[in-house]
Length: 403
Image (cartoon, rainbow, N blue to C red):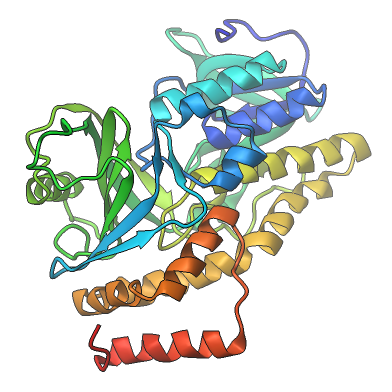
């Protein structure tokens, strides 16, 4: 289904600004419920992303198999001294998608459900004489500004959200890392040079490639994503990816495209303005610390924002908008807190990164890591097992552990 050139007359129930996985999901949920929805999207923008999605996302959001470009069955972590630890996935897989195909499919699904998919770039938020939210935007290929009116607005326009800056001031304080990746053609299976696995995700914890985050080589079927991230100003992400491609024997492969964008480090303290706007996805800061995982959390956040807006529409209470953040943090706040501690502690020096990779050899650590990732829940374990892992972590940190 093609985007609309002209929106319908009269105020929408909801205007969704941003058509990534978060915004497209929010628009789909609301349109399915019969609300009038405008999905305003700046077409052509692709976020740098490894493309990993867990089985829970595929199930919860009914993702068809043809969008899954690869099914990863092993994760490999690599230390600063080039030590490798393979972490096999038991009883599941990590799905890999290409955002150039995945995002448009989500927008098309929202449009098929009844949302007006409008191509254009958000400019300003205001209210008319009656207090109705008004979005001013520039249509794609147009010179004159146009407007949309709606009872509520969902801001899903990414990190450093423009609508967030204009309506929810706390959103300006979200700290970010900057990510950059290159999509390149996958190597020929007979090419022995590249360090690459078609069903394996490689994660590099190495200060040469990122002083405070990690770098990756992820398969996408016929292509692959090679990227890195850092919050250090002045650190060249492009040069880092070039070094990583050279170190892995992937420098001779054809580059298809490249993208860069900021990734928020933790959820914003406030997502709504208490009246007619709620933020979601990267605009609300829901990229997981340490892992940088964002697609699942973005789509969940879009769903929760849509349900909060639906409640506000049905009850007439704008206070319902706060339910989006409340529900998200209740389910995932503890995970984000723990991952934030992990990133701040283990990613600071190569010595600590070396020890972190050693910890990943532990079968119980591997089991809990994959179960938590695939199911998006903290894995329960006995007090004895928690104590054993904690003591092993301490021994690695202090340099007592031999393996």
